[in-house]
Figure 1 (cartoon, rainbow, N blue to C red):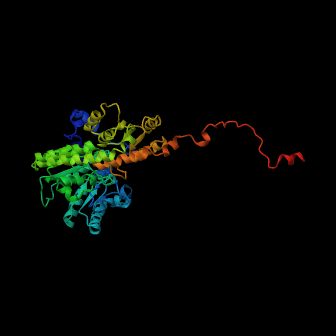
Figure 2: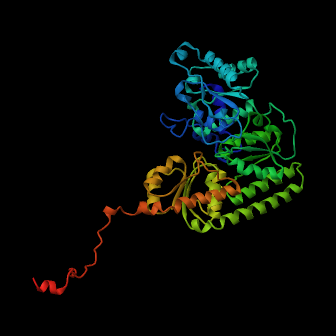
Length: 487
């Protein structure tokens, strides 16, 4: 591992905005955070995978992976991030290094030609070049190649030097976003500036969730100037330094860029969520309050309250006929990041009981919110084994499992409904009306008569039912009594 990469990793682990790091001693910080992955321990994703997850939803960028075919061959899509424009981000580009390229040292030349080809064929706003384990180990200088290609072709070419062996997926998220601060932010200026320009960080626009919130911002006159990374454009990342306020949605991965925007450009930030009615309202209020403090018109607060009152009334009216179908039901929530607390709050608003929530990829702030919302930390799980999850579901301690796709088979084996709330889902649940869609999905799953049929014993496993004994009677015989007497 190069010294430059080691220094980047240490900088990420010394993040001043992370309460976990600041609470540790210097020795504890090095011992805990710098722990490297062991072979086979990257099943949840390596650092390269984390960088791709964080940056790939920037839609008009060509994401070029400098690696043998196995790292990104035949790549199509990364998650359900929706785009209102280009679909270039969904395509997989790789240099497809062979053993001969590696042995003969032709990796850098192959990379330069690949950059030239992708610019000529796709005309992207920029090219992001990702290092991988193989190309980092053989010493390819992707930074130098990217600089030469940018000068030659007149297009931004950004090195993302985050090989998989650097650490976990979460570390890759941080290092990938840090490359944006280092190479992209501040390189372009907006044509116009307003007092209501904001940045949104960490909302991946899964299944178009950001589009359920953007109309609310439009009605308030708030413009999303900068965005990473759902439905984002390269220019939005480059102009983030001119926003007035930053909203941080996925705090664990994007906390570093929010803090650096504040340190370098004086842009204040806050953590919020667009899941649930009250959390959506709180996020809008906080945005408007911070914008007014930075020069936005004072009537923005009044218009915000009017909008919230209107939307909440409309949403509760839509929920009223649905609430009896889900009230009192028990939910096991197995997800990560800000969903660990934002979805909990949303479910409790409906009168549902959350029997457990996972703390994967959760920050100390996320944990504090869960404790505050649930009143205790007894229902927080660091990592629930499938066997334990199955036992909890089979003992009927939960009526439904809400998780990602990898847990669905545990629920199906336990014959319990499952709802996808992770990046693979096909329905948007953000904003006010997203809450209505979520309740409808819960109702469809929990109250589907299929589950009662599935849990009942099979007909051949049921005990035989004793039929009541009927009195024996002779059947009537056709003909008259005289006919029989003559016999």
